[in-house]
Amino acid sequence: MARNPQTIRSERTRVALRKAALSRFQAQGVEATTAEQIAADAGVTLRTFYRHFPSKHDLLFADYDSGLQWFRGALAARPADESVVESVRAAIFAFPYDVQPLTQMAAFRAAELDPERIVNHLRRVENDLAEAITEHLERRTKGSDRALDVVVTARCIAAALFAAMEVWMRQDRRTLADLAEASHATLTALETGLGPDGMFRHS
Amino acid sequence: MARNPQTIRSERTRVALRKAALSRFQAQGVEATTAEQIAADAGVTLRTFYRHFPSKHDLLFADYDSGLQWFRGALAARPADESVVESVRAAIFAFPYDVQPLTQMAAFRAAELDPERIVNHLRRVENDLAEAITEHLERRTKGSDRALDVVVTARCIAAALFAAMEVWMRQDRRTLADLAEASHATLTALETGLGPDGMFRHS
DNA sequence: GCAAGTTACGTCAACATTGACAAAACATGG
DNA sequence: CCATGTTTTGTCAATGTTGACGTAACTTGC
Image (cartoon, rainbow over all chains, first blue to last red; front, side, top):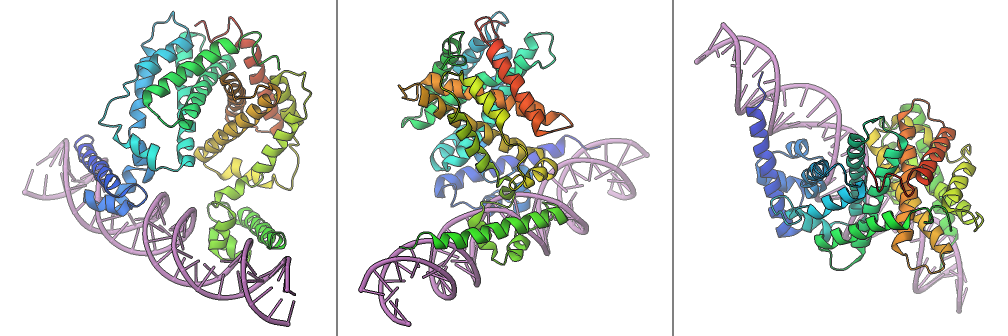
């Protein structure tokens, strides 16, 4: 059975498509670029384009998966005697925000994508982060039966990170370093502001 | 300037479209129904269909907005001396889960929609709930400058509700009453499990 | 009832997306 | 190299979705 070599061929067209898309996006903008143009530039058919990417706009998030994987790894690498929030904070700050190879598209999504799509993506990010944090928590609390506490805790932390993204989206200057700062702030709010006399219980 | 009567006409076609869609969905299923069929049944053009609904699948969520409004109102009606979590819990339990006029479509989305779309919708729900709760909190903390604590608190509560929806999605029997139960459980986890010696700080 | 302004529709065309089926490219055992 | 199984791509056709522009319906003031 053939398994690997074809995969190489497939990878080649995937790269070609990404490259073609980047060129077009830079030259004419995202919306003005048709999927057919990208496919043609890469020397394949439109149908093939859609075999490699779920949608045209998905190309803008081509780097997302690897970023998420990075986060998972960073979280798993944190010492076990650290609080979960601290681990998340550390992972957030250690993120290699300056890598270029896959982050080139990031500029476009911030600039040319309509807000609705961006928020949509951020919601997906929140969800993925929540799952990553859940796994991290389960890895620690050996009695890992996906207890409600674990899930809720993880989702609260992810929610705090979402709040940071939300705040970040509102400001003019949107450096990725600023995003880390905002995350730091919301995580702190989560730690300190939501204690025994926090907002949960009292008005 | 004309303002109202035309709105009446518009409303008529909107209702006709909804009705036509419901019939077709019941008869042939959602995916097998084309937007063109719905438009034709309602006696309008395809383009007009898309002027009234952002997408074919959106028809399945036509009742969502009113549900959200209901929640907002219920939340605002809670006594001011009640804890926020308790207010949310009460609002959730008071929800008129058995109204039929607008909830008929609900069956279809649970049955015929692919999971990805459903989760997507749930994420939107979480977001909307978070905003509703944020407003509710701001209404109380008079110094309403959208402080970080408020936003984070609101998003945590919404996250707990999302966790409930998640749990709910996993079970076989999915009564709306069960959803309320699940919400109760996750909200309790939020109140009790995340205190001073909760999971935020310790492993 | 008529003129002017506004709103809801229709028409047309361009893209985006997807399922079904066939042809081409590639890998391996013989 | 050839036969055969697998992976990748091409072809075709049906939808889904949207922008641009023109027409019809409806309202109000005169």
